[in-house]
Image 1: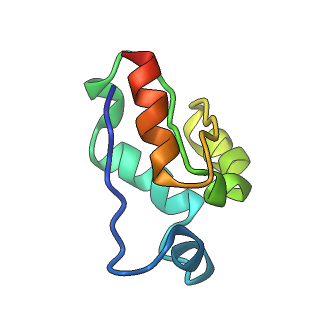
Image 2: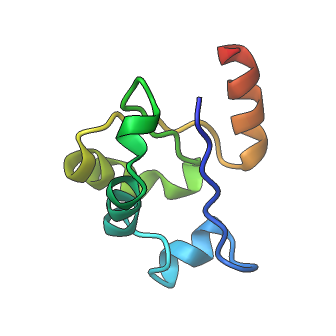
Image 3: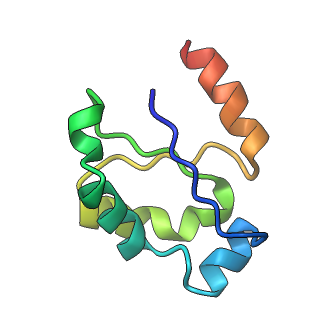
Length: 84
């Protein structure tokens, strides 16, 4: 399991999306530029519920599955524990 931090200063996920600092294109570019595909054995990108509206476009641009875990980062911790 690989976690990538998307830190945009003090902006929340909602603010980062509204300010176009977190977009489907930027996510796809980051996956390509950082060669993420070569670092994992799957093509699954987990995002927070606050970014749900981007999931479909991210899937189209990356051909990765993009499940939505929860509305906040705590949900990712719970998900990660379950996945082991």
